[in-house]
Amino acid sequence: CLECRKKHLKCDAAQPICGRCQRNSLSCSYTPSRRGGLTRAQRRIHQEQRRPMSCASPRMPPSQNAGLLVGGTPTTIEAVPSRLQQLDESAAGTPNSATLNTPSTIRSCRFSGLSEREMDYLINLFYANFWLVHPMLVPRHAYAQQSYPDHVKLVICLIGSYYASPTYPRASLWQATTSAFSTLTVRDIHRVQALVLYAILLHAQQQSKEATACIVEATDIAISVGLNRPEFASERAGMNPLVEESYRRTWWELYIVDGFMAVVHQLQGFRSNSVGMHPNLPCEETLYAQAICDHRPVTLQQFEDRAFATEACAYSSFCYRIEAIRIISRILAVARANDAEPDEIQAVDNALASWKYHLPVSKSDVIDQYGHVDHMLLQANVFIQCATIILHFPRSDLPLTMSTCSDLACTRHTSRITATSRQHTVKAISASKELSNLAALPWCMTVHSPFFTYGLILGCIVQLSASSSHAQTCLQQHRDRVTLMIGALKTLSEKWAVAQNALRHLVKVSGSIF
Image (cartoon, rainbow, N blue to C red; front, side, top):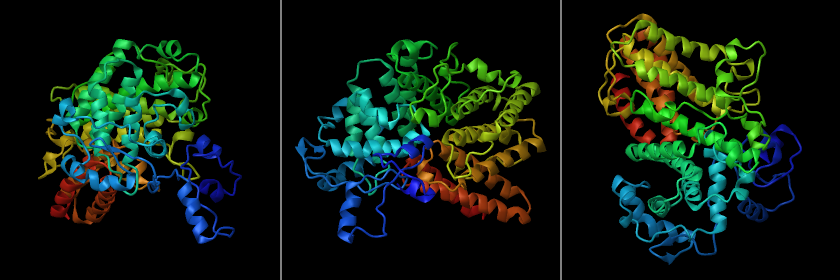
C-alpha cells in the first residue's frame, strides 16, 4: 500500500486495509507501482479492481447487475443519477421534517436493490473516513461477524455515500433509512447505535430538530436497557471483548453527541449526563483497531482521580474526549448566567486549564512525528477550545453581535454578561487561535468530524470580533486566521450542509470587515 511504500516497509497487502495501517489507524490505499510490469491498459484494469481506502474517495466501481430500486424498477448504478435527479433536487440529498415524520410519503422505496459489491464500497468509505472520528461500531475486520441489523447497515451506507467520488445518488438511501426507522419496534443497543450515527448525519445536513429527536430517543432507549450500567457490556457481549468495548463506546459516543447537541442549541444540560452510573472507559484506538481490548478497563472515577494517583497510568485519547464533554456540562450551567458566582466561573475555568496540564507527554500534540493525527485527541481539543469561548466570549470586551451571524444557531442567543474583564478577552482570542491552528494541520479536512464545523464557526466569530476592535496593525493576523478557517469550512461544505450555511454567513461578514 502507499503508506508502507512511503516508509519503505514490508506490507502484508491485506484487503481492504493492510495490517500495519490497521494497527496504526492509517488511511490505506493501493496504487500499482509505475516502475514497470504493467501496461497502461493493465494498470487501468488493476486500479478499477482495487478499492482505495483513503480520505480522497475512490470512484464508484461499475456494476453490471441490478443497482438501486427506483420506483420498484431495477436499474444499473450508471443509470441511477438521471433516475434520481428529481428526487435529489427536491430533497437536496436530505429529508425534511415532513419526510421524517410521515412514513406514507416513503412508499415502497427500499434498499434491497443495492448489490453486495456496492454495499461493500459504501461500508469501506464509512470505515475509511467517518469511523475514524466516531469509532463506536466494531472495526472493519470484525464487521461481517457482527450481523448488524438492516437499519444499522442503512445508516452506515448512507454516511459512506457522502464520501463517494463522484457524488453518489442518495435520495433513495435517505428514503430507505427513514422507512426503516419508521417501522422499527425493537428497542436495543443496535437501535441506539443507528440513532446516534443518524443524528450526527442529520446534524451535519442541517436537520437539527430531527437530529435532536434521534438523540432523545437514543438516550431513552439506552437508559431503559441499562446501557449506562458498568456491567451491561460484559452481560450482553457473549464473552467477546471486542463487542464489549463497542458497547461501552456506544454509551460514551451517545454521551458525547448528546453533550455536543446541548452546546450547539445552548441548553443548560443534557440527559445522559444526569444518570448516576456510567460504563468503564474505552481503550486506545490502536488497540481497538487490532481487537486487543483491555480485560480490565479503567473506571470513570479512576480517570477523574488521576491527578492524585501515586502511580502514573496511561489513558486513551477517547477518555480525554469524554472529559472535555464533562467539563462542557459544567460550563453549560453557568456560561450565560448573569447571576453566576465568580467562584463558579473560576472553578470551571480552572477545569479547562487543568485539562491540558494533565495531558501526558505522548498526548501533548494531536499529530505525531510521522504526521498521523489522533482524531480523538483532536476532537477533545476542539471541545475544550469551544468551551473556553463559550465561557469567556460573553464576558469579554469584544463586540458580540455582527450582522448575519445571528442567523447561525450556535450564536443566536449570545448576549453580553454583566461582568467583563480583559482576561476573558485574552482567553477567548487565544482559544480561537488554537482552533485555527487545528484547522492548519496537514490532514485531509474531509476526514474531520462534522462537529469540527462548530469550532470553526466560533473561532471565526471571535477573530472577526477582535479584528473589528483591534488596531490596524493586527488586521492582517486576524484576516489570515479567518481566511484559513473559512477555507476549512469551504472544504467541509462539499459534504455537510451545516458547513455550507455557516460559510455563506461568515463570508458575508468577513467581506464587510476586511
